[in-house]
Length: 145
Image (tube, rainbow, N blue to C red):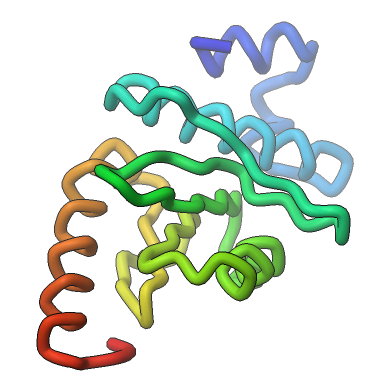
């Protein structure tokens, strides 16, 4: 949905269910955050926005095109660093850059860009900065961060 408040209301959830994120509504909070990120991508002009899944039950929330590259994006609603599906994707396709949107701090580490959810509206700019960094490192023969 194009409005997160309407989405919450349509699901017949009280505001406290989102704010407190009890175990009962924890999964919904994740879906709400994914919807928020999707809206930011749409507003930034990314089109199409896809997802990836494998037969081994791995699923990456979003795939976006950055110039000639496909960038996988995993969305986490908390501080959980585990992004198993993103790791499966990275091991299989070896993308130059991957993104995790979460509550963790902004960080670029070995081709994994973590963008805090509050900065996701800066995704295009941060992606360009990370891409430029990766290109410079590649030119200079530097691996890692």
